[in-house]
Length: 380
Ligand code: SF4
Ligand code: SF4
Image (cartoon, rainbow, N blue to C red; front, side, top):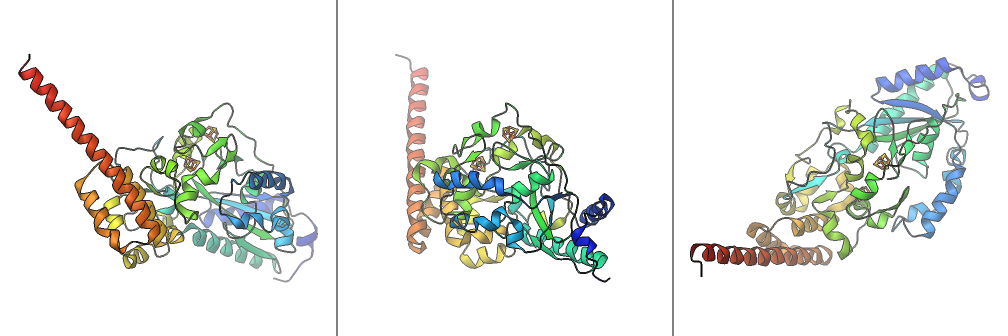
């Protein structure tokens, strides 16, 4: 088809948006809306967040503020943003984190299958190709958490959901277990109305967070958040946060699990999110014994690659320290010590200390129990 300047200068009718939504649905997106490409109102919030140091080591958040605020500076010619969501739950999620299997390592649900960034970007690319086939010379650029973009703000502007007190996007009919993507385009499309907020007086996510990372409604201190600590952060995890991390070895779903709106969470419709290599149910001990080659093989195309082998082992060491006492775990921790990097060794020593403390407590309790039993059998 040939280029028609009308597509760029005149707002297309809503029937064209309906056609785009149909194509997005065919490509596996659960929702698709049109956002105004203007997120300048987010800059003061970002600046306040940075001033408090809540971004931790995420230096990229300190750069490219002009492009973040104005998508047409990031991609010249952008007139509209097609904002999409893709659901990722492969089984219904429980209402809260179930800590009754502390010997297993918990991987956040979005990360148990294929890396969603590729899935979303590839499908958005196909959506762009279909748009170009229909409208001719049209610019489209796909993104999935891959550029300086206020992704959540665009999604909120488009009506895909509101930002909850845990700072994630929620939809009344879909909860929050979904990932986002954007297709920037030169098409002039009619914008959808922004979403309204529905957290009300609820504060369940603030109360449930194991490391008190949601320091106030809508304020997340990444430096305390398990998702940041186990994925983005590469250093030594602060001692005071290690017990709160429990057996979460990559990311954390707790604030989403407790959110009442996730009673309406929807299941994934694309197979990419199906767990690979048993990442939804693997013992900490098994993870701990993975040599690097096995880690690389089993995390090929998975979000876990992002953390790298060393930080992954560091996370597993914390999980082992938090697991109930077991001779097998204590032996495995000690046996790997000679091969570990200084960072992982430091966490392994911490875990050994935790295991020994639990061992001692168990012995003391056993001795006390024996004493009580003896007194009952042979009362004075
Ligand atoms: S992801 Fe986990 S640690 Fe981070 S805010 Fe939510 S509950 Fe807290
Ligand atoms: S748990 Fe409650 S406060 Fe937190 S995001 Fe959900 S509705 Fe909002």
